[in-house]
Amino acid sequence: MTIRRIALLLTVASLLIGGALLAQDDVIRYASNASDEGARELDEARVAAFEAANPDRIVEHSVTDHEAFKQAIRAFLVADPAPDVLTWFAGNRMNFFVDRGLAADLTPLYEREGWYDVYAPGFIELATVDGAQYFVPTDYYWWALYFRPSVMEQAGVQPPETWDELLAACDALRAQDIIPITIGTRAPWTAAAWFDFLNMRINGPEFHRSLMLLEESYTDERVVAVFDYWRQLYEHDCFLENSAAYEWQDALDFMNRGEAAMYLMGGFITDSVPDEIEDDYDFVQFPIIDPDVPIGIDAPTDGFFMAANASNPEGGMDLLAWFGSREAQELAAEMLGRLPTRTDVDLSGFTEAQQKGIALVQSADYVLQFYDRDTTPEMAEAGLNAFAEFIADPMNADVQAILESLEADRVRIAAEQAAEE
Image 1: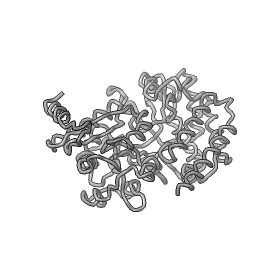
Image 2 (image 1 turned 30 degrees about the horizontal axis):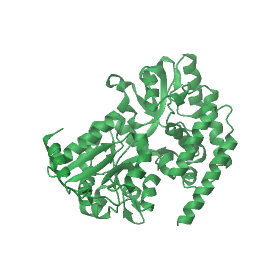
Image 3 (image 1 turned 45 degrees about the vertical axis):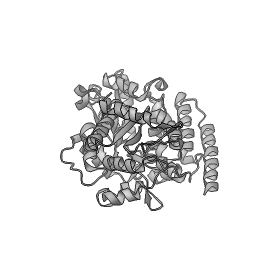
Image 4 (image 1 turned 90 degrees about the vertical axis):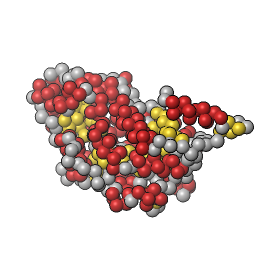
């Protein structure tokens, strides 16, 4: 513990008057979900840089496990005091807190920092609700089908570009005793990626977005078709067995060891790949199922916001200004390959993989977030549970019953939303 932090604790202790703790203007409470190793290193580097440039400010930096944070944040936002700045996700996940008055209006920050001129319009739109900005989108990443070229070559398999090629690749890899596709579904959000891409490839990204907005029925025959295709992957023995026993990083170990060939995952996957084999990782877009369907891609956008009842809004605004700065986005690009949301970040130094990821996103017809970001939290929870139920026994799962349950949830949640409005 540094001398400065010890002094801070002593100062805070001296301000206990009648059991009430007086808030300090130089303390900024920052709650983060950056618990993975690489993400945490970046998080700590950003905070350290802010403190170095602002010696009169100290950031009370707390990190909660990424998955646990998704539930804990609701308690954080109604706590007294609430954190001033929090990590979070663009899309419906952010709008949920805006609609409930739990997020501060950051329009003055956008005006002060000139962000309307340097943030790409699409990302400003992601931050906007009813004409005001509530979110600072700082980086995004692509989702793609990752593969080990050396492992694929061993089995004489090319990266699949179509559905038939994907099924054939599974057959060829199994014949070589290689796990075709690894996946860890102990936390079932990884399964949601398969639902997202299958739905977008079969029914189109516009239908998928409408489903996420609770405007389409889960019992629609188009959604049934998604599970029919999903089941084909299990018929071809494509996936790592007993996936629910593994976290996503545990499942990645099979690929790192060369025992598995492919993984549908976000660009952050390389944060957990040993440096010595990172050059043996590549990716392609999710295979095409119907060439007449527009191409959709998940490109989740991360960032920060401020609690509506922040105890230090001035300090929170300053920390957000740093997180959204060109320098901070360049740091994120340099340390973890995160793609910047600002248009004034120099891309010339980006790696071949980063340039490829940017092209992948820019070539898509539609860019969405992710299942649990595009729909409401309650619907997301129901959907993730449904996907977990399906993949637990995909050959015998009662898909109709699963979808009827999801539809009942959708109708109820949509009615509750309408009543709130």
